Length: 44
Image 1 (cartoon, rainbow, N blue to C red):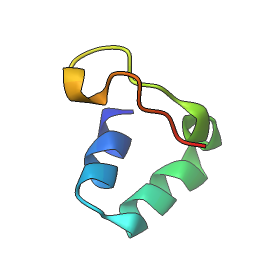
Image 2 (cartoon, one colour; image 1 turned 45 degrees about the horizontal axis):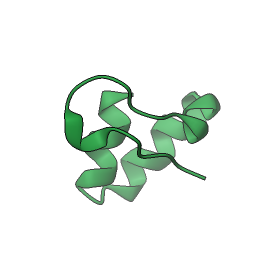
Image 3 (cartoon, one colour; image 1 turned 30 degrees about the horizontal axis):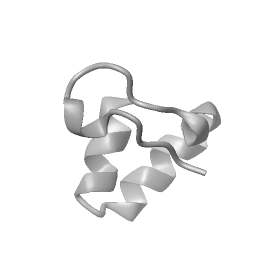
């Protein structure tokens, strides 16, 4: 999940697409552990 948040933050849409295609359940993920700046973010 950390890799997904890092790709989103970097606006790396190709990496985001690759990650989500491999693990589609990450589309609904919410960060619960550090880094704190990700807390509460969701994708939907």
